[in-house]
Amino acid sequence: MRIAIIGGGIAGVSAAAALSPFGEVVVFEAESALGTHASGRSAAMYVENYGNEAVCTLTRAARAYHEAEGVLSPRGVMTVGFEADADTFDADIAEMAFQEISVEQARARVPILSPDLTRAAVYEDVLEIDTDRLIQGFHRRARANGATFLTNAKVSHVERGDTWRIRAGDHEVTVDIVVNAAGAWADQVACLAGVAPVGLQPYRRSMARLPAPGGYDTRSWPMVFGPGESWYAKPDAGGWIVSPADEDPSEPMDAWADDMVLAEGLARYEAYVTEPVTRVETSWAGLRTFAPDRSLVIGEAPDAPGFYWLAGQGGYGMQTAPSATAMLAALVKGKEPDLPGAVVQALLAGRFMGDQAKSGV
Image (cartoon, rainbow, N blue to C red; front, side):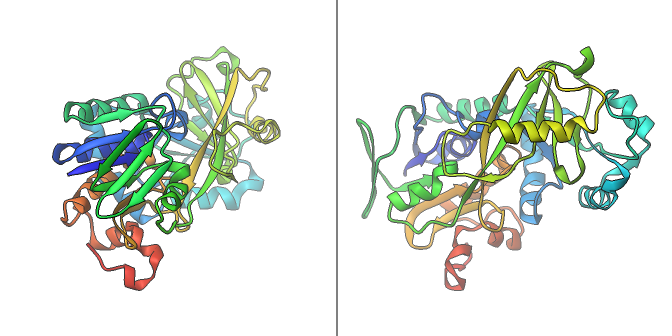
């Protein structure tokens, strides 16, 4: 079986690792390196109750793989609020199963928090993902199975017939199966192949790296959220990164941080801490791409046999990668995924094609 995977982010690389044991795999990546866009700009965490039920099921199913690969480390999450934030704060702790603690306890964990805070809560069963180690592990496994990775190889032509013909620059291959793992560009790839798009929407998420606030050692601090995810901050490489938690619709592109959005987010963050932002060392942005129902899109396109989707990871791509690609591999092999049937139905690409397309697996 010959398989072409379009996209070399976490989706494409993990798909290559899952499919290469039983197929001849080639991965096309438009950029000069794997994981250049969203995958290389992720502040990834492993949070089992983050997302809808289908996403959470995938996340839980992926934990054993992450633990075996040694990519998880303790981090923890905290949310804080003022009296005026009470309704939003209560909704946050209900949704994420936070345990409320005193402001004094919160400030003992993160000493730059404002003493004027009135509410704080923590969620302990949260882990940080070593994204580079995760991607490199999938890459090594795929290469060991004979997979080929082509960089600087933007796909320009996908022709459907008894087989699929794909062209990218000087490269041309004929394959039995195409996997669309193109992230923010996945709908564009589908249209290029004459396949109906599913309505994916990329959203920009920005980040600023600050020096360690107040000269503190931030390494043991938890990730901290403002009420309603109005901002968040976390330790990173000895410093402190802050995001305005923006979610602005975008066209597929090499995203960058908007200065005004970043400034507004940093101002929201400053209201909750004692240390002002005096310097931004660097900033960046990535695109988180969601399907209309915010579940991943996995499986064969009902209107194009042999064309498989692995897209719509949103903010869950790293934590769900092992189980999402296990489901993809099962579908390619004509087997039932090792997931509850309702979850499979909630993830299948055919859900966007009407009841007739939802024929199961």
